[in-house]
Image (cartoon, rainbow over all chains, first blue to last red; front, side):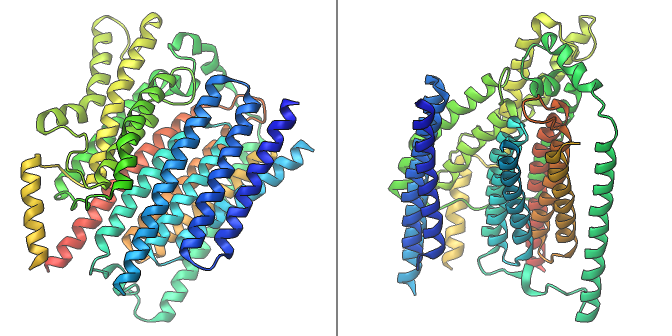
Length: 94
Length: 333
Length: 95
């Protein structure tokens, strides 16, 4: 039962990663690509971390996975912001 | 079924590793090359995990991809404004393009021959009976080593000489960097978003470094990974434009730079005086001595990597501020 | 002989050759440094592949320790090389 639930979570996570990657390749400009990458991949990583935490059935491991997810969330949101701001500045300068 | 799945995974992983290495070296755009190299390092870390080398995977992600990438990107940044002599004359030695093409093919052929020779040697080595004496010796003596992570046992006990000399190499490298010139210009003050991230990320990185150092005794981790994490805290502090990035001034900095080699030597010499072999820890004390050496090594490694990122000997903050002001005035003229 | 050892080992040989070729042919000093790092990664992969003993078996920790040392030495060599390149460019600018 727990195995099934964790498999479903991991598969769902992989689906969002796939969506994010397709978005990165197919979307027309930098801002939409950033949007696809950060939004979809952050959710994908969250689902993946939840699936792995369930799979490990260990509180300490689950907490570490949660911490990793939170750190990646903050880092990717910040870097997306920095990249978008830099691109915006270069546009206005032109 | 399991092995087939694993084979597919291996194939995909190796394909992306070779592809990233190729892409990183095929481009002539330096920034692109460095970013692809960082991606290459991260995928390599996955490969190390796949080959059951988690200690190496951590070090690769933190040092091979992270800090090397930061160093290389900082170097690209320094060259980019105005000066592009790296590309101005790519074939200055071979003005005739015909000679250049011949040379390129010759080098490619020789490199292919090297790959072939290496592959032959590898297959030859793998087809002979495996020599298991060393791994067995390690696992037999692990109990007496003071730690239960075999990689840490090799690094800090069985082959402690290697690690001592490695720390000496690090110290030499940073002294070389000191003698080559001044620090690179600092960064612009960051906006509120990045600054806000760094405000809580730096304490988390310091905690993580302490955790990695402690956990290295019985699980993947240790002084190298911890030192790299600590250096990363300094790197992000520098990226937000701060002038104080956790490096102490003058004399204290020198002590910290030399601490890894110094404590290692002190422990070794003390043991000699007590009638034991150099770095031959008594089993009862081995765990504590290894932790002591690793703590000093972590501080030295972190300081060295951070100084490499700064690019030279940091002046005291007052001098630094004056230099920055001077630089600003120069750029305004 | 394990399939994984052979697969990763042969890939490592290719990466060493790729890195060496880049280090010899690139005009940009920075990219030469990147190429040497790629070559180093190939050597590391060769060592880790040989250390692998199959799923479920503990791998040989000695090559792992060598590679860990190698990674740290590689980053310090990279830093020194970049500092040398920076100084070289500064000297060229002064001329």
